[in-house]
Length: 166
Image 1 (cartoon, one colour):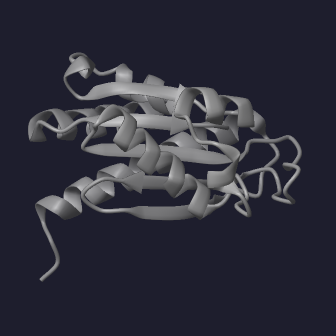
Image 2 (cartoon, one colour):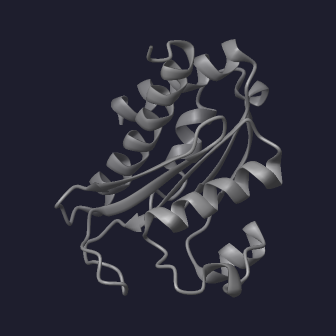
């Protein structure tokens, strides 16, 4: 958990220093991503809100994404992760939004993904989506790994914005 808190603090301090905001839409990380960002004193200056979007019902009620918008899209996929991130960014009017959607375990999901599979989306000044495969059935370890990797993606992207490649 120390890795998670450390990355939450790093991301939070960067967002604070830049005067930027973030919203979260997470699934199988179960709120750990939001918790890590909220553990930083002064989080209210950058953390606008978050939701655990664990089911289709949550997607409709919390994110207002109807079935038509996800037709033909698997929920634990990069396109779906980007849709979640874009929607969270728009709904909260945030500089950035980070999403996570996967299968924590101990078994896979109904879409054929093995335990330890997640997709992470980032929307903001840059958009990215990545897939992480831990090859583990350890539910809690996967939840932590998913949140850590999401925060790493955010930190990497924020730092790249400060130092663009020539």
